[in-house]
Amino acid sequence: MGVPVLGGAEVLPDLHARGIRLAANAVGGIGNLNVRLQVFDRLAEAGFACPPLVHPRAVLEPGAHLSAGAQVMALAYVGSVVNVGFGCIVNTGAIVSHDCVLEDYVNLSPGAILAGEVRVGRGALIGMGATVNLQVRVGAGARIGNGATVKRDVPANAIVPAGSIWPPAGS
Figure 1 (cartoon, rainbow, N blue to C red):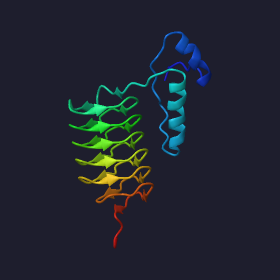
Figure 2 (figure 1 turned 90 degrees about the vertical axis):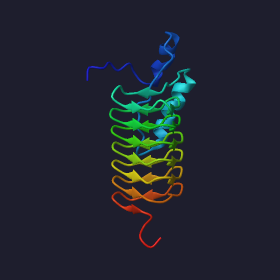
Figure 3 (figure 1 turned 30 degrees about the vertical axis):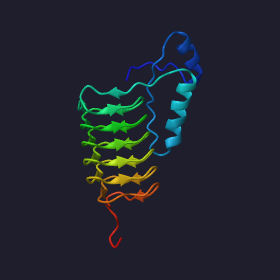
């Protein structure tokens, strides 16, 4: 892509000494959230801040709030009175409707849709094309598979299989 690679963590002290203070964490951490967290920790230890980043083709309503390190990608929509926590990713084409809360390190995959008043716990992952109904709570560390439909609360660390409807039949 023609972007120069400056190096790994070993170049951070030199960059900081040259007056660079802002950084972006480009690690997604879908398979292992700890990798993403380690990058944030290394940047902080080296004295860098991670500002919120919004792609120019994303829509961010005026009443929305993005914490440091949050990233909103192209064609994503973040609605009114939405709070996006530290280090969250609102990926390409994702929709976060009104009055939602994304706690720290939430990852919304491309095309994920959250209806209004949804709360997503720390480090949870909502897969591609998944939909979460109005006023649902998704617990910390939960994994919602691609294309799943979530109709009721999901406990912390639960796994909702791709293409399924939550809760499972008979629950």
